[in-house]
Length: 552
Image (cartoon, rainbow, N blue to C red; front, side, top):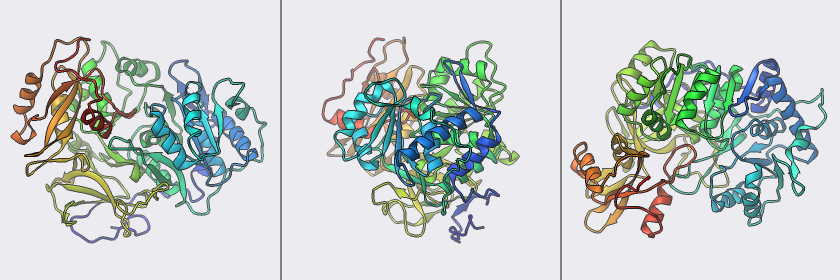
């Protein structure tokens, strides 16, 4: 079996290949497709703000996006120019993104929670022509811009006497003859998304029109229900596109919410009858530990995908009990592959049966992808039940890292090194074990911190945990855990936590580096632990922690 145009013709018996989908990505590009679909669905509800209750039809969203595109063209924005958005999710935050696609510009958005050094570095990398900014972030972004070579116009979503105001963009007179940008090659870069930054500075990842449209089409055709979707991720993360793009293609409605809160999730089910949502494992655990309020109806919630980090079978089963009519499952995706690449197809009875029989699995390889497990030291392709690095191949793999050399990750023959450890079993169900770059040596053992973290958060009083390796002369590295306890719980001591892991894991995973307690841990907005940042703080003595759980 080949993938798409034949890029994956490897005959190795251990290359696992997904089916070939019937989806043909629009050759004229993402902006053209969105314009056509939004015009077709103009009377349907496109998005609703969970706080105010206000919303948009596709018609009103299209009008604001076209007006903004007209303003961009008047400002000289052209194909391949970069624009960026920095802010929380609200009804207007997606408008500059759609408008940029309408004129052929490249959206490359910022995380509003990034510290200024990261914002500065990213702005200097992508050099946007326009930065659309929430009012509360203008000073940070302006200060960052002053330290770069970017010649950017700052536009605020609020009111300002100093900066251009977004309301003047959407006030542009409509043009009945407006035509969106049509690409001559849908392999050209459409958007730049950013890696999580969990192991260092975020990297800009260039994704093509073909990749983003292909992935969105595959998700829509795999049985996921995008009638009403909910995602907490801001626009800079691929997890946002996993809901945003398919929802537009399906003519569904997005529920817009600025931040995750367990209680808020249940309230949103009641108010908006959400059918599809994406969670990080951190958010899923918080939901389980919060519990479901009495009387909440979740019968309309068809599908819930959990990604970002490992989730134990214990927590997945607890989540399924909270949402008994929902297909809750782990999924594996990465920005370099334009979204989800391993999941369970909701239209396959066999895969649904496997999903419930194998709660630790992320699923089977998605359509239009191929995967092989490679020994990271020798490069040899491995067979079933052998741990190694996942490598992916597809037309939906990234074009490369924006402004950076991609040779270490993207081989000339099209195979992408994911940097993730895992294996597949005899049913070709895949299991993810953690990041290769986070794995450290204890004596002759390769230690995956994610496995220890997964055990720690099953403790009834531990809310979240990050495990790192602390250098040791004799053993190489020793596992150290930094944990947050559940609000209002009794005191938890180091000895109790160390013993908890000892009783559940092999000796090499024992927390020989000790346990530290913190009021908060550094996570990205998508729930991924910022381990490189935490390690730097701990080794430099700049992280504030406690020897026992602090009082709440």
